[in-house]
Length: 246
View 1 (cartoon, rainbow, N blue to C red):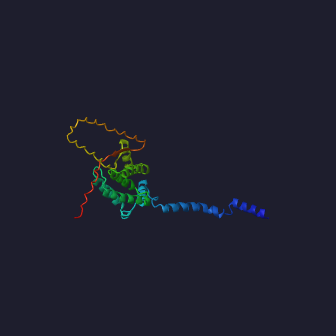
View 2: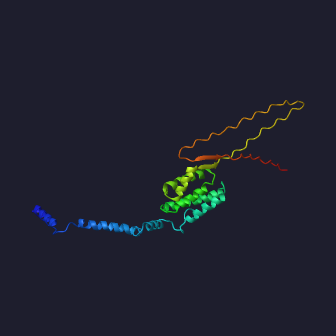
View 3: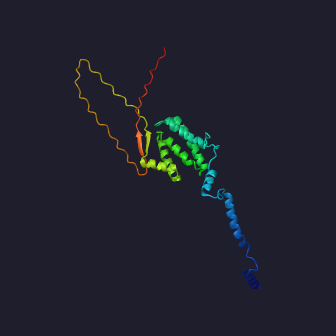
């Protein structure tokens, strides 16, 4: 009896007298509803031209001008202004801790901005301006950070103007510059006084030995050249004479 009922049901479905199952009826409707839901989540998909969709995407992924980042609460415009001002104040180069501190606070805000708005189209420009300021800071940390940011812009924003400009700089030759630690000047040896009643015999002047020539360290492929600048030696401090109380 059960088999007869199943066979009758199959005949009715195949002949079209009985509609298909509810799951089969809902399948086209669920697919269309998923597409409409995706369109509603993407506000830029309904725009007619590709350029309008691109502009809409940039707008919805950009940080607002009145949002602030980092401990000093710097906006993205403030980050660019800080890098621009430090690059001017540094001149040819700088190791001024005041300027370095300003750059580090702006760098902290830049990283927080990138974490929150990774698709912001203005990030490439801000990194490029930060590179221009860091290149003038002649410390090892700043120079190595400059090279890391150059690689970051080239890899993350390869089609931008800033990546093309950095690739051109690297092709022309990029060199890191930083100052070595200053050494204390050597103490000169005391000159012996001539003995009383004794005639000093002329002594031959010692022949000055040629200064050793530093052999530059070969640069590994894919790495920048390094120029370590040796500063003048520092005179040792002479202790002040103690004054005995009277």
